[in-house]
Length: 66
Image (cartoon, rainbow, N blue to C red; front, side, top):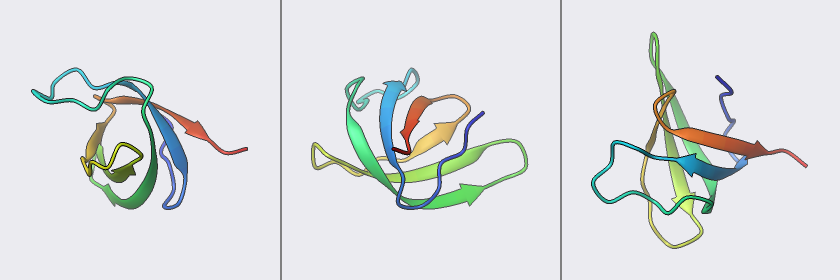
């Protein structure tokens, strides 16, 4: 599991368990990381104007570190 850093740009690959998910392929900027024992909660400001947290490893992302 890749864990992003605050400030990283990410692309959503899959968000399977949310009733109103962010569309796949949407880009966003990581604003906070909450690291728990076996999962990570990632706060994201999405480019479409939404703010929705990710739960890793359940949600799948790509990190853009160019």
